[in-house]
Amino acid sequence: MTTDGQDPGKDLYEERLKLLAGLWMPDAPSWEDLSEEEKDRWRGYAREQ
Image (tube, rainbow, N blue to C red; front, side, top):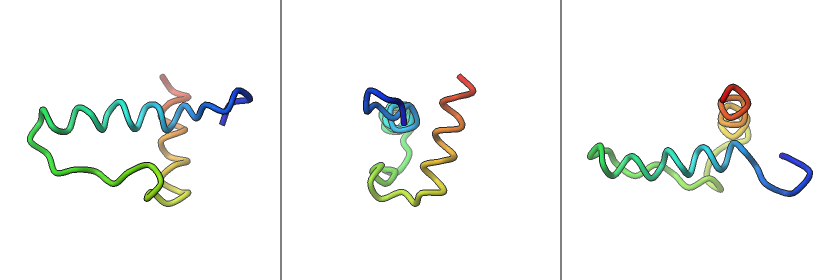
């Protein structure tokens, strides 16, 4: 998490989550329902961007 309280992994996850509806994919779990391991994986993806 950054010092301003924003979590880039959460931001990226929620951005991609919005795309699922357009792909006729089932809903993904909310950020709060993800395990810490999954959240860390998304944070890593965000750092790669």
